[in-house]
Length: 319
Image (cartoon, rainbow, N blue to C red; front, side):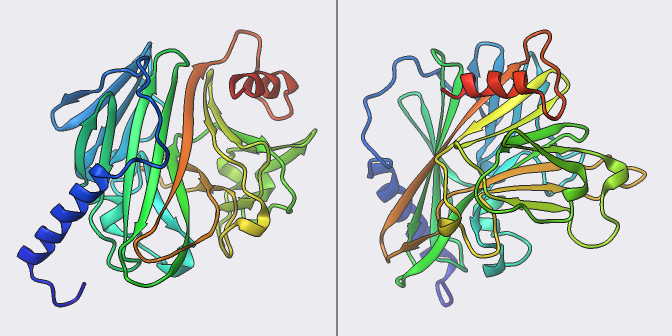
């Protein structure tokens, strides 16, 4: 975008917002009358479904700033880390941009509009990829779930290749698990993992965090779900399964990360999943979606690695 003045860039952004708002999002569906009505409070949007509330801040990269059950946030907030908190969206692979992530996509303001009972948010153009990210977020009262639909549109004028990537920060001392896919997992957190009956488990253990090297897991999943449980609350993400052949280079369909812990900061864990690595022609878009569920575990189901009752309960929840 070199050479475009501020006024010109603003006009382009307005044009893109109008175009994306007029464009049917991913696929045409009838308006779901059971969708919850979003509220706008102090610049943020809230979607309430029973005892669960999702909050979204358009001014901070349209990230999900909190996901509460009975008033308690399952995600981390900015007091844990003032840059990496809540749930955000990136483009994969990271080798295309290294660090930090695109500000346009990750943390700068998004344009926002309400379409029926759906919040639609649109980023500015990412200077590196030339892409615009838009999100549609809604809560369904009937199913008790939240649907996040992402669209990536290529405005660069040249063909690019990328994958969608959802990055969610949760509290430490939890347990992440998902069905094992085809490829063997790799990464510096393997000492805190195990596999039981086709399920991969990562139990957060501060004493086993690597002193050197990465603090990550890269893995191929199966069945299209990933769960994180902390105490008696579980977050389940449901998505379309991706084969290893369709995964971005040097990445994994499911990824986990544990931050450094200091004397003043207890750290956080990232639970992440990625969609297919696709070629995107100029002016074209692709769509990708994730369904979130948040619930309390039934009494008697213990959040421990290898618990088949826990796996059975999650599998029933994602049906």
